[in-house]
Image (tube, rainbow over all chains, first blue to last red):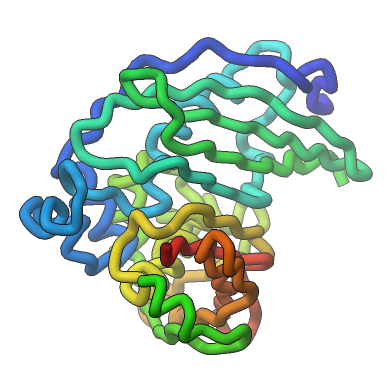
Length: 148
Length: 140
């Protein structure tokens, strides 16, 4: 089943708030081999002018993940997860994610394209804080492999 | 930091790093990120879907590759934009793991905003695994 072209432009409901914890930042930072004290040491982060621990640049993937799950679960999407390959990824920041942030993400399918048997779905997750201010936008292109 | 910006020239290498992924790294990243796709820890599943073996999460390679730039810039908050294209898988051998090399070079300088575009070359087995890997760093 090909990806439904009518997905283009669809906007999903905002995800439930994700509370960014210090230990989650530390865990993620260790996993991506980060060594910056600003990821681990609250005093160092505060001395650098931040409210709390700063998350590594790719941390928003944790919040974005729940939006992509919405997309994959959409009954009429026609996206077979076992055929999905991550094509590209981008994060565009207004400000860094810090511990204590309560983040909500809203996914919009910005484009659906066919490339031979394959489909390319670009999904844009806009991540905002508890005040509704923009923090970061995460954009993923998923390549859905068709039958060869 | 503005002084640091002024000292930069396009083509300067600002960081170089070799990193090593093992199967342990992949399990750790799966837990931290919530991406439990079995192609990142089960050989049988990886080969069944046509991969040469267990591969690293693209997002792990992306996340680890930028750390050399974070350390150079001194603060993860200086990264204002980061994009990559996943061009080839990093196959993580059960015994040997996978050695990945990162070279970070100045690609472009925006003098008005004091933003440097740092281009990453990320290679595994001599082949590039991330395409168009660009990090925008604010040095204002």
